[in-house]
Length: 351
Image (cartoon, rainbow, N blue to C red):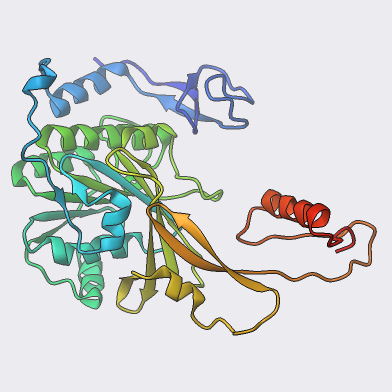
């Protein structure tokens, strides 16, 4: 018989639980991160671990074979670059970003290419099957190997994965999934953590890659406990202004590749279009022989990218000048001013 739930305070950053509220988390040191939640009985969690993950025995590392290891290419070279060469079998990938940035659009787009050789299960807890069909038609996705499942029960989803045995699973989004053995509401710290753990055990036991979509909070961080990023194998983050068309995909964590690579995309009416030459896109429309501008090369992973830097200086009417930087590190700008002032002989004390 399951025990009664009790009220505990849990840190949204690291998942630390405490019977009393504290202004600072004793585990990770985050301020004002303790939220009230209901502690779930441990019997339900242990039972779910046995039912989903199964049992395994120790295996000598010399007996583990990697000869059949290969990556699934997504059809987007920019996405493959960020992933380290493609999607690894049995991996758990988290894609996060602001609302409307293009997370669901990109996942649905790669289904058209991956569906030529793979069976894909697209699980949505936010949209109906008709809404997904309308968006797929707009993006030109008509592959019959793409299966749509509108469900939020994570245990039902894992059973469908075990019965259908698809080659790739997409979950949109993890904040809408719920574990029936937990009494907390979907999107809570406990639900997000346990649902991600269930997906992780399913991916590892069946050797099926799973891509999950995660929301962000008002501060731009991934919604849910910090342990969510520790569970998954790769964390991809979409950056960019919703009012602009360009999007940057950056790897915050990647167990199968480098985190220095970025992917550049252009959002249009027909979905995301990869930008294979970011330098040309960034320098397009640049006026010639304009004062206060220069072109510099920055290294992003294994490729250099040309970018334009613009500067504007005017005499300040106050004793202390105001200096601002957009898209450029403020401390680095102050250091450059100091070097130019001392070594170059240019006075910036009143600019």
